Length: 75
Image (cartoon, rainbow, N blue to C red):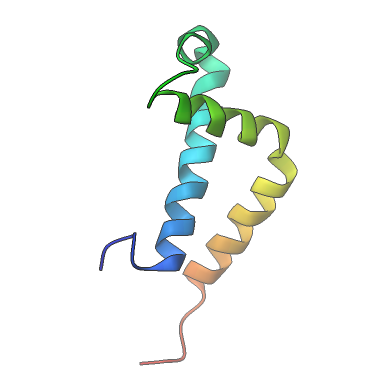
């Protein structure tokens, strides 16, 4: 099933995009700060979200990891 049709997978992709963008921005801030417009601006915006809301993003990542690692009762 595609991540677009599964809500949990879509949330996982969004969280990974935010975390990855913030991590890359910490190493290469000049590259992302130059590309604030257009399609590459999405990564800059995700980096800003990851930097400013990092406690909430980390809590969401921990919750998502718990939901993924928890065995589902529906077989």
